[in-house]
Length: 218
Picture (spheres, rainbow, N blue to C red):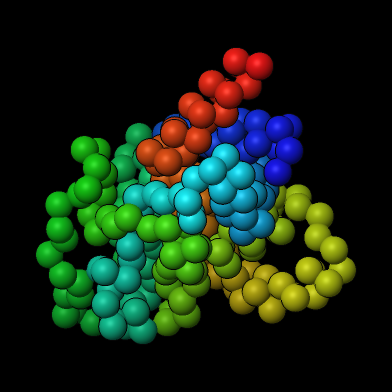
């Protein structure tokens, strides 16, 4: 990866680190293109290894599977969350069928101002992890990022990419706006959670610091 590309990754991570409670829907939509480039297209992982780091960067985020266990098919909806949004900390939001409570007692958050059911993920683990469930249908974080970047973020895909992702767009399009949080589509709130988890991660801060030190010194 060339120097300009390394700097661009650091700048994108720094931008995500600034996502706060009052982020606008327009900023979220535009930010999904950055999330796709950094995570789905692995620009962050490639940049990480390009500066001599081993394997993959990591981040701490909510693990929805720890909450739901084997009961994902029993919920009306569930969102992993883990976002500071409109003045509220939101995580592990779900509505289950019937009256029997689901889930386990949450372990203490890993971070000082963290959320229930947090764990440490590598990037590949994170992208494959459960993001939301709607009427028994499960979607991982990679799928949510792809959908939002394609439909909301203005990402221009090749003909082959669009053909490959048509089914995903159709599936996730059916649940759009079925979960609303503060008058915002729940999928956009998930994007905020992803952006904040990535931007606030220790490895992201380390990468930004190293890139700034390296290129300021030249």
